Structure formats: C-alpha cells, structure tokens
Amino acid sequence: MIHKFIFDGVRIVLDVHSGAVHVVDELVWELLELYRSKSKDEILQALSAGYAPAEIEQALAEIKTLQEEGLLFTADPHQEGYRPRTDGVVKALCLHAAHDCNLRCKYCFAGQGQFGGPGGLMSAQVGRAAIDFLIKQSGNRKHIEIDFFGGEPLLNFKVIKELVPYGREKAKQAGKEIKFTLTTNGMLLNKEVQQFLLDNQMAAVLSLDGRPAVHNAMRPTPTGKGSYDRVLQAFQEYVQQKPPGGYYIRGTYTRHNLDFSRDVIHMAELGFRDISVEPVVAGNETDYAFRQEDLPVLLEEYEKLTRELLARREAGDPINFFHFNIDLNGGPCLPKRLSGCGAGYEYLAVTPEGDLYPCHQFVGRPEFWLGHVTEGIKKPEIVEKFRQAHIYNKPRCVNCWAKFYCSGGCHANAQAFNNNLLEPYEIGCQLARKRFECAIYLQVKQAGLA
Image (cartoon, rainbow, N blue to C red):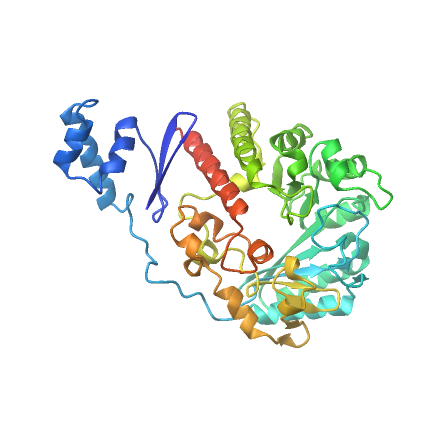
C-alpha cells in the first residue's frame, strides 16, 4: 500500500508498511499509478506522448529497486493478524486528584470536573494505594508514570505534595523510575506550585485555548468572567523558568474558532514554543461541535499552520506543534503503533474514591468500571475488550494509509459517536490524516528533500 499526496507542489509518496517516504517527479508520480497493473510495453505506450522511452525505463528500474529493497509496495507484515501482549502490565495511571473545578469550561466532558457524580478530592490514602497498585501491576517495567488530573488537580495540591515524594521513594525501592505530569487550568498556578513543579521536574500541561476572545468564551469562571489574563500571566511566569520536566500549552478548538491556526500563532507570539491545539469532541446537540461542512475549512487551516511553522523554522524560530510530531524512522514501539495509548489495560484512570476506569473520558460510566486500587481489576473482560481494540480488529483502519500513525484513533471518541470501540470517529479520522500529511511534508522540507 502506498499513499500519494501533493503539498505546495511537492509530490510525496509514503510506503505505508515500511514507513519510507519518497519525493518524486511527475514521471514517477504517473508511473506509480500504472506500475502494478500494466506491463512494461503498456506503460511505455501510455506515457509515450510525454516522456522519452529511456526516461520511462530508467524510472521503472528505480521503482523496481525500491520495491526489492522493501521501500515501496511493501507487504503488510501483520496481514495474518496481530496478537497484543497479555502480560497485564500497567505503565501509567491518571490520578483524578480532584473531581471539582474552579472554571466552567463549556466543552468540558467531565461535567465541570465532577464526571457525572458527586464532587470530591482524592485522599492521600487513596493516592498512596494507587501508586502501590501501579508499582505492583507494572511488573518488570522500569519506567512508570502518574498523571495528576481533574477537574482541577491543584484544588488538592496538599495531597499532590504528599504523593510525589511517596511515589519517588516507592519507585526507587522497586528499582523503577517514575515520571509525574500535572494538567492544570492555571488558576492556582502560584509561585509555590511553580517551584514544586520545577523542583520535582514534573511535566506540565497548561490549558490555554488561544486568543483572548476564544479562550474567555469557552473557559469562563463560575461567575462568567474570562480567565485568559489570569492564567496567561501564570503560564508565562512558569515557562520563562525553562521547566526541566517540560510543558505543553494545550488548547481546544471548536466550531466557534474554525480559524484555529490563528490561535496557535497567537500562542507562539506570546513566547510559547511547545503547543498542542486539538479539535473538540462533542455531540451534535452542541453549538460548538463540528459539522461535516466544516471540514474543508479545517483542512485548509492545517495547511496554513504548516506553512507558518515552516516559515518560522526557516527563520530560526521553530515551534514544536504536538500534532505534527511523527517519527518516520520506525516510529514508536509496535504495540503503540497498532493499539495507541493503551487505555483500558496499560493506562488506567483512578477516581478520588479509588475506582479504576479505562481512561479519564470513561470515568463515571458504570459499564466501564474496572475495579479498585485496593482490590485490583475486577472486570478483566472489559480490559480484554480494550486490549483487542487495535487497528487489525477495526475494519475501517486495516486499509487506511494512516493506521500506523493514528493507531486507530481515540477509543472514547469511537464509543461516544458510534457506541463501538472498533468504529472510529470519522471527522477525527479525516483531521488526523490531514495532520499526518502536513507533518510528513514538514519533515521532507527539514531534510532538504524538496
């Protein structure tokens, strides 16, 4: 399988199963349409009006060489199927430190932080039990991760301050290394919190949607006021300290800002260099959910963003845009390429009460309850359902050229829109494919191939 696309006049060919990328001329572009279905004589006749026979024969020889080297028309190495690991290793937990929030984001999938249930804060006891569960369930895996999430996790900063040293000590005793990440809306990101994140080399995900009007419209306070000015100051103060654990400014774009490339550039102009702006996932009953007719605009926005990022890179001012980060040299490990984030078996979410769910977007839904940190997994059949939700069990993914980059898409989106883990969210698929084309083009330009 190959995928061909043209970006700003550059003809690019991706060999799907090897991951090889080729920049080709117009002759090879045309030949690839005929190569596997026509004989040499038929090809020479079909293209004789535009090219000399010697040119065509040389190009055919080059294509044949690439095919023999496993760089073109490569067979699917897993066409007989894929069997995921069954060792039960858990590598990361999303700890819901707080089921409460100090903002009222309109697109919040968590119901303003409460996930459809009563609000509450995680106790240190539950947090320690969750860390103990992770260390036990991680088996021989050396690297493990805790993500502090909410609601707004900093509403429970006191407990977070207890859990980080506890986790480090427990991991050390077990011969493991633990990484901590915290996602925050910034309302409580004061100097004490900033110093704690810096001292503990924690990664931070900082929620900012872009331009002031965009951010304030979707991320108001409980009184309806905008939060932009307050959180921007905190984020800039923090990022200026060059946090050793790294950060991402993470935004969400909706139907109300289809011109989202302007929000990315706005954040870049504020001094941020690690940026992630992602499409909202919302039901059609909301006024901010995407419609099929929005797709041409959204796809063009990704192209605009690509050109802007390329210009900035060439000017010596590169921006790290999360969704354009792909590895063309083998990429992530095989399970991640075929199964994605590992939600439901390698990556689990923990509520303030200690209940386990496949990920944060399934929290509060009884049919996806998995167990408890003090008792372990009680619903192994649900775990197995998620383990088997890989691209070779998704009919629409098997023949998709982008399958090794998106890994089948988000399980929560598939469940929300199609009530089926094995049927991806179509608008999400189309946006992802465009992002990957943009990412490949950027790498081609960076490598000087075009």
